[in-house]
Image 1 (cartoon, rainbow, N blue to C red):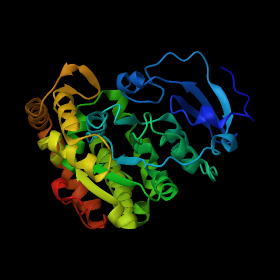
Image 2: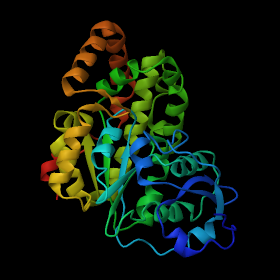
Image 3: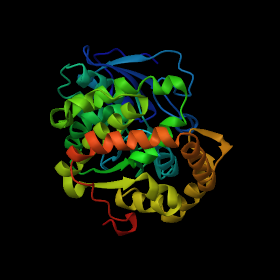
Length: 343
């Protein structure tokens, strides 16, 4: 079905299956295509890796897209730093027909890229938030996991949805270093760019000593990326207070089932606790980014021990460098209450 950009009917745009696949920010133009709910399950991410056959995208201008009424239920936002279990948590909360999880929609990456490039986004974050919030079933809820590259627009999304809540998921420096050491070379090659991106989005660069901006090796650069993203999370937590909760990966990894239940409750998502619990039990037994592969907390811990044993000296140097140049200027430790106590 072809919809002229200037006359997209609200009856179509009210349908969440008519999904904003892409966004051209300067031209204020969305690209829509029809998705079935199974694509949300199949796709590790809803960016360029979306697992769906799309013949073409139908253009819809932002003004037409923004004309739809705001959904009655506010979205649940999951903001996170890199490699901290956010895909695991999002998969555990994907419980259709009660609620769906949108894992890193490309439109949020486009907005984050535009902000990083200095482009004006105006009302595009608000329009995008409204489109992503549409329930996939009557009375259903929507969890939106944004890419970490969209941390620079988290304020825009929260301001556009004043009734929403967010979980800010992060990890310790050691967990972050170990996770990066388990990644392929092409992932590590992106570290300097990601560190620079997060630094530009926060005020950390103005507080750091000159030596911190010149990491001596790759693991130190990884530590700089962690510090910059962590500083962004701390800023969001400080600005939004009771609307957000901070969660550490270690807490999620220790009990992914009950933490998922507690998060669903905090987000006020509609799935019954027993349904979330059953889903989380299944998800926690598989690799969140390769669901055909069985996984477990014991295997994760074993892999971490192997990395520590193999890279002991490199990790020690990175920790020492971070303690000298990064940790003294970070905001105070993030307040993290146990998820079971969230109210």
